[in-house]
Amino acid sequence: MAAAAPKTPRTYAVFEDRGHRHRVAAGDRLLLAHLPGASGSEVRFEKVLLLGGGKAGAVPRVGKPTVAGASVLGVIEGEVKGEKLKIYKWRRRENYHRRIGHRQKYTQVRIAKILQ
Image 1 (cartoon, one colour):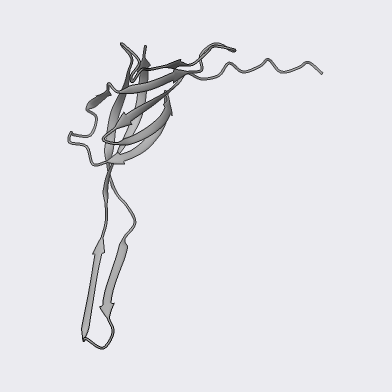
Image 2 (cartoon, helix red, strand yellow; image 1 turned 90 degrees about the vertical axis):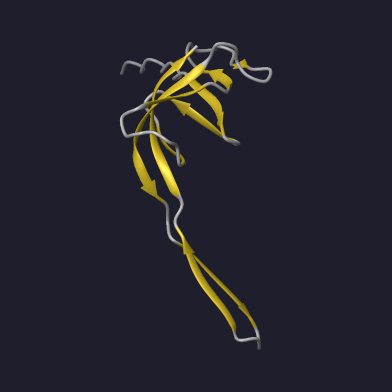
């Protein structure tokens, strides 16, 4: 049997968006906190902290604090609502009961390219 050719690692990036860090590669889909913009519009993330992958044995490029000239390009695919959270507050013997719910809004983004 012939040995399978070794896979070359996909290029990936770690970027920061409003305090949250995400590790992505081209073609990935991820949920981000609500972003302004219509479905199908492009969004660019400039704060790239690390670039890796690509050729086998390549050393990742680590930014100080960001990688110069690198950015991640994504396409907004739509809005999604998260799970319903139910919050119930009460205090014993005080006739105090509060029941509220919350659904976080997310934006689904497909990563189109990692620009170096």
